[in-house]
Image 1: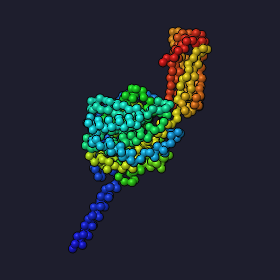
Image 2: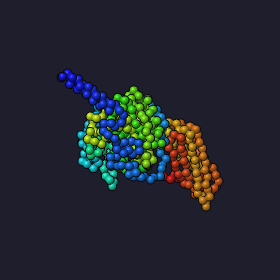
Image 3: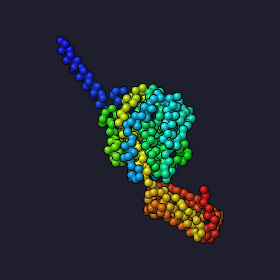
Image 4: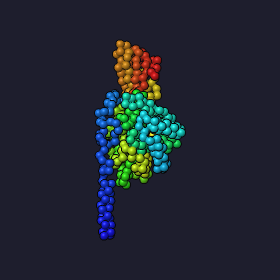
Length: 451
Ligand SMILES: [Zn+2]
């Protein structure tokens, strides 16, 4: 009798085990029910926003963005050396510190404590840190920005995540995982010198509708910041099964597809140290990259492959994360950022505009790689009765580092003139310089640059 009962229990247990196992290996959200409304393609979205229409509609005049690097070319900094320093201990340490404050809803004391912790941590790394404060109808708060200045360029590359969470939970994965990646990248990269400037940014107000990042992108736009790429990490630490742990998602708009290609090249180049294959997903309004798009910057959103079952709950804890996966994903973003930040770029400069017999301008490549398909134009306007409207152009297929190309305009006129010189290349940013002068017959006199 006993034996029979025992056998029945074994059978029942076996069925239960089978059912649970099936649930665990089924893709999707079988354990936690269906995810809430998506903002274009991802279940991840600001907690207190229902539809993408509820986000502020930004209307700005698009500006030419800095020319992007096309594919990784390793130079001075050894990426593998950087990757080896990004280990699970580092990620886990930052996660424990961040979650120790409790739920970090923007406007709460815990969120402020996390902000101070981030400020102090970046400061201790020797980086230039500032609070970027914002005031908004929905919520006011601070983003924390740390800068590692480039040695020979003003181009900016950003890595970011949001340090606020919902009130319901400690936000270990959402988005402690992204902020841990930002901190780890800062801690490692600060020991090296990069050609371009890198900003490490932790946003708040994300859950209220991407408020912190919206104000940050708006200020960057108004400040003419030459941001080349924004790498936003939000929820990169959930992978319950081994097969989830080798895959990741990336969200991009058309202009940012080059960042997808670039990251995929990196994941192949350093596959041995990263081990994550990326799957492009298209556009999404669900995280802090969104307003960078709205302000015309190129940005992507990195995200775990299998959406977190404990999203926006008290169970979004470190215990439910996969730290190995989080570390790998952080490595992928670090390698992408570091490679971009050291990539040599041509930089054009209009080194002189002078008079004499006509006008002569000189365009020099002061960057550290060849400029391809350089075009330069002199435009002359003004003169007596405003009759002068002359242009002269030149182009060269290649301009080496420190190489210069002269450009001449000859004419026969009279009166005050304005001279505009414009130069660009297929792989670098356009430059413009203006000057004034006086033309008397074939001679141009008193040429003075307009600052
Ligand atoms: Zn998030």
